[in-house]
Length: 372
Image 1 (tube, rainbow, N blue to C red):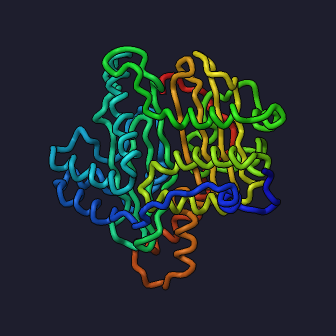
Image 2: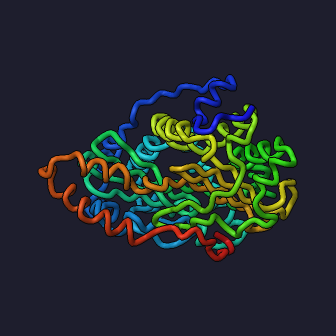
Image 3: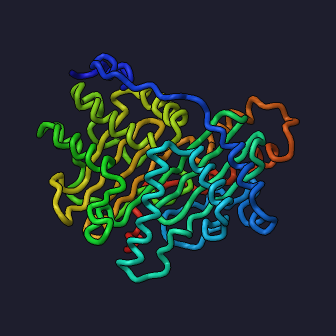
């Protein structure tokens, strides 16, 4: 079934008979959870975890093992860790929370494989930007292979990107966790979509016989459209569109249910012709077959890469072209808000445009970094 030009994927999927599950859409109370975490900390800990909302540090994100600003789990007692995980649960779904915790488990696996103390499941950091409950504030949870960012504007609107997850190994090959795959659906659903394509569709979808060495947007402050190649949802059958939507839902469902619903509602408004699926590398699953895919619309980009460590090392990211770090929400808020909202809003209003413009994804592939 080919779609009509300009028809959104939501309408086309409804026409195809796909019943979209309705999730609870209540906004998670991250403000209360952040305040509870801050209340559990001593003065030195609060000095480490708190940054101003207009701080340059808010944009300093990465997914590699490195030194980070904020308060690590290693510096918390049991009560404080419980409060920190309460904040994390407010931002993520149950499945998303399980994924990020399993990624921490993989740090212990890497420590055994590499015999390296730099692999540390306790080196995951919480950072709070601004005052929880203010007109604009945000927070971050970050460590090796996890970089999750939230920006809350006006007490309700929440931006949730950049949002990165990764695994190394993608499938544990030996030891007590042998066979563990933390992000299996992110690969399997895409492979199922590729397998369903006709030869003619594959010529559009498979854009290169070789996968890039990593996600193309890297840790750029702003992500841009990579290119407009790939197979559009308009060129798919109804069943293939369902497969594509299930893949997108898997990526979106890391976030808390209400936030995932907001993401998916925007995706379903995308015209079919503008929603593109592209694959690079061999389509057959075999050891060493590095592969990459992306799903790209007018407003967002999902990238997946598995090439490092003999193609047993996944990197996955969701970017919003206008919404990373809440740029679009802040612009709308400051257009509508009175000028007497207070010091934090004024600071952020002045700081955002210049800082947002100073970054910018180029779309160029970064250099491979072994052992990320």
